[in-house]
Length: 167
Ligand SMILES: Cc1cc2nc3c(=O)[nH]c(=O)nc-3n(C[C@H](O)[C@H](O)[C@H](O)COP(=O)(O)O)c2cc1C
Image 1 (cartoon, protein in one colour):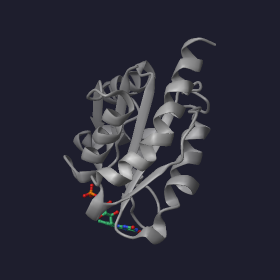
Image 2: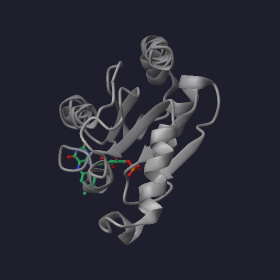
Image 3: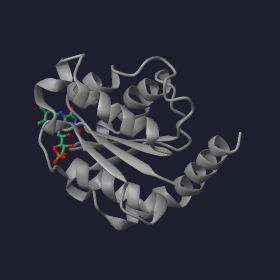
């Protein structure tokens, strides 16, 4: 099972990126096949003819599973991530399992991953078989939190990926 991680943090090399890589590792026991750190894409993200962004889309469409990660800004996911997700047509992900992940400083915004990020992924055709994962930035790599989430989520993602490969 191949995993592509998409990171929508304006700062490169962020905790959000590290958390997404940890989640990718939990899903397969291996490092993600590709990590797309959107902070490195600069003005290409607003250039709809960018071959670079078309290449990133290709890496998403080639993956069996995607992890889509963002910090919480103003109660929702970042505009940077939205710029990338807007490149996908409605339904284009064709049932590909996706795991929405958000980091934030305040647990009062924990539902943003369910009510803001997950619906956008579903709109572009992803299937989201797990609970979205919201991690406090101060404890994003706490293995207990990741273990608890993974116990339920890993089999759900594996089943969704198998179902998609063998319709
Ligand atoms: C502009 C901005 C807005 C933020 N708004 C929120 C917010 O509404 N809710 C929240 O829980 N955290 C908020 N935060 C905190 C970030 O979500 C948190 O620091 C980030 O997830 C940490 O991840 P990072 O180290 O990968 O950037 C905000 C941070 C910034 C810079």
